[in-house]
Amino acid sequence: MKFRRSLLAGAIGLAVLAPASAETELDKLKAEVEALKKEVASAAEWKTPRTLVHMAGYADIGFTDTESEPGTFKMGRFSPIFHYQIDELVMLEAEMEFSVNELGETEAALEYLTIDWFMNDHAALIAGKFLSPLGQFRQNMHPSWINKMASAPVGFGHDQAAPNAEVGLQIRGGFGLGGISANYAVFMGNGPTAEGDAGEFEMIESPGLNGNGDGTYVGGGRLGLLFPDQKLEIGFSAATGDIDIRTNTDPLTYEGAKRDYSVLGADLAWRPGNFDVRAEYIQQSIGEQAASAVPDKADWTAWYGQVAYRFLPSKWEVVARYSNYDTPGEEGDRVQIAGGVNYVFESNFVAKLDYESNDNPNDGFDADNRVLAQLAYGF
Image 1: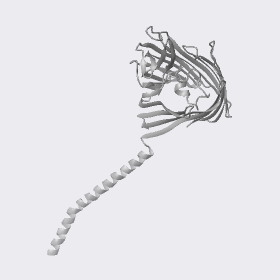
Image 2: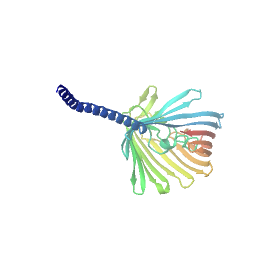
Image 3: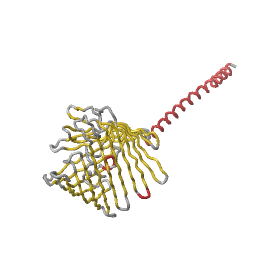
Image 4: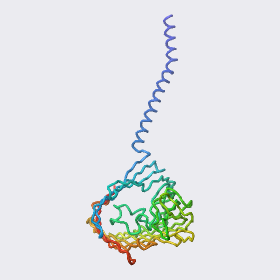
């Protein structure tokens, strides 16, 4: 009897403990499953990360032989470009430029740095220092491995007729228009500055000023129309605003008298068959101001036409370019006829040999002809 009671008590105890033990095992199993899920999720993030880090850029090395100067080998530039993107939400992009001056000293510059917010499929908001969206050459064609010649067209270099860069805000994107497509860019920024004194302008500068000495802004943009069947793009650019004249560079001194400022431009890119045809016109203008040390209206105007032909399936290519640059003064005016031969090792590695015939059309001024050779590599 005593044995039966003990056996019954043990059976009841097991019956009571069994659910608790099963519940404990179930909790352990759930915890293991959750841990396994986290490991799988971690592995999935590793395989398809939310972030993307990318490095690109270009570099070039050349040789220049100018009529009035001895020929010299030249380190061109090393320009790494960095991209850091999170999903399809935001991207940071920046380009550095390293070059070597005649004394062998290394110089560094920040070509652009922006934070890009992808608002939707048709628009991105870009904030920071960006290449000017006005025209085509400065924002898309100036890298040495893309430019089919070893130099920029006259008037499209730094501090010439084509605006270089801007610090401000930009919205750019694209959309469809029936059988054609369009791309656009609109911006507002600090604008350029012009240096002048004693009744003459020295230059107009648009490096992307990180300050606003005149307290006003410049706004504008570009509209590009693409005709895919014809492999043709036509672009139109314009900007307007006010700028001030800088009369001293150290320290920065401005007149305080506002001047009207405007930009007008048009560009064309056409690729029929083995040809690559490009043309562009740009003009920066400053209005007159009687109270200024440089009272007269001033224009910086440049245009070029370029034709390249690739002898496919070979790697040889020929290119010819005519460019013209007109300044408020006479010393900087240029008319250039250039021709060259390229050997395209790869689409991103090109050897170039060019000859430039340069002329200043004004009496009493000369411009040297020159031979240029270049190796350009994009990565």
